[in-house]
Length: 253
Length: 256
Image 1 (cartoon, one colour):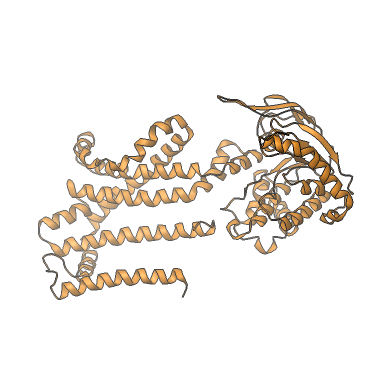
Image 2: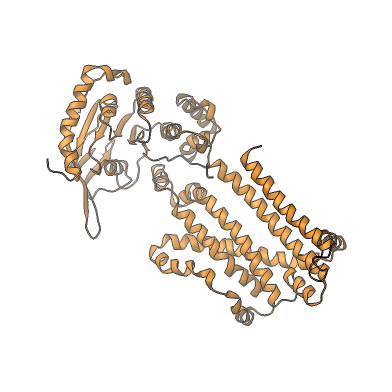
């Protein structure tokens, strides 16, 4: 067995062991059912919610918000990253703001966002964008910074226009970093929106978890939490696999 | 080709990097440039290629002025690894041909020939990350040569390679030069490489770089690295070093 395969199996064994341990403690009521239900019960309840279609409406609402925040973050973050990269003076002004961005508790602006956008999905999408766009912007800046100067010279030696250079050399060269931006933007969009739905929302998975918590509906709450975890892990796993494949092709370890 | 060319990098303390210098290259000539570190060899190549504008003086290629754009017919190979890591060897080599709108059949034929010529047959569909440094440099050379440039500018293309590989790559370069009939300008820091490959070697002074000597080697066109055992090889290398030594000492900041 190769070293990397051993690491993967160790990782799987750790997660399976933790889940199995929780299952055992729940079954033996070391952990009381009012505190947590067994993982197998979470899975059964989630299966039931999927089968009855109960989960479709909150999941669709959340995915719509996450999708919108993700797309806006990618487009705006990527464009702003490229703009700031092209303007060194602006870069010097913006760098400290970006470095301290995640130290700001943006949820405190939620009432302001409601006042601006109204009581609908837009404030939540805005929260998602506020979280995710800077990650995309930082990744874009990192990617553009690391395009080797010699490749720009190659572009000129091949008499490429600026647009051709961007399309054929700059973008593919920066792609691994942009891909990291995509991964982070998805994670931050999801975190921002689920957390936002907890605070004030009338729909979505975050709202569903919060509502179930306040109503002592443990089975629903844990089933929804499991669903969010599975989605986040699944999407990140897919992106990670794709990213790894691209990185290996380029000799990036 | 170069007349009174000077290059000064502006700034709080302007850096006079090059010149004034004049240079004429004969069609089909293999010309090398040697000089101390930081003497402006790469600046010279950039100016000659049109990648950088001279502060003063004129650059021309085949009678047409070169003004901040690389003219058609000039191919450049850089010192650093300039292969595209996201493309296979085949696609790397085909890059310029596709941009030039060459017929797909012609692209396939020329790329296949270049892959074979460069000894990359077993790696045609590999990515640069799967190749050694020398093989990647061969990809970059092939990418330039498939465009059939009439003037090939090489900026220390073998700088990162070990001595044996450099000698063999030098042989390959000579073979390419003979087959294509192109004019070659090679920037190198290795005196033996310059003495071995060139028809003529230009020796540059410490910064600001100017030509202080031109050494004609008198080698036959069908030469290869075995001429290293020719007594004339040692004499040429000695002459290059005699011209270069005081300049290298200057460049190191010591008294001559």
